[in-house]
Length: 158
Image 1 (spheres, rainbow, N blue to C red):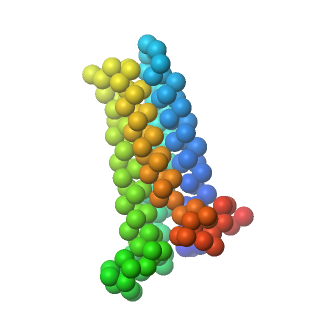
Image 2: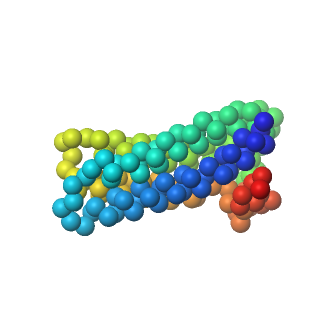
C-alpha cells in the first residue's frame, strides 16, 4: 500500500503544479486592466486548493505509515533525524514547507471570495499568494536532481 500511495503522491504533484500555473496565469491576466473578477477567474484557484488538499491527505497517510516520516523520528529520535539531511527533509522540512504552501493557497482562494475586496485586489492578492506558494512547493519537492530525491524517478511506478 505504501508504494502505491507514494506513486500516487509523486504523480499528483504534476497536477498540483499544473493547477498552480493555471491559477497564477489566470490571476496575472486580470491584473492589467479593469477586468471583472468572475467565477471563471476563481475556478483555477479552487482546483489548485483542492489538489493541494488531496496531496495533503495522501501525504499524511505516507507520513504516518511510511518509513521516512514519523517512523524515522520514532526509530532514530529527533536528534538523529535532524542530523541526517534526508531524514530531516522528509520528517520535517517537506511537511512544514507544504503546509505553509497549503495555507497560502487557502488564503489566496479565500481572498477571491470576499465581496468587499475590489476585483483588482482579488487578482493581485491571489497572484502573489499563489506565486509564493508555488515557489515554496517547488523548493519542498524531492526532485530527482536533489540529494533528497536521489534514486527517485520523475514518474515513479512508470
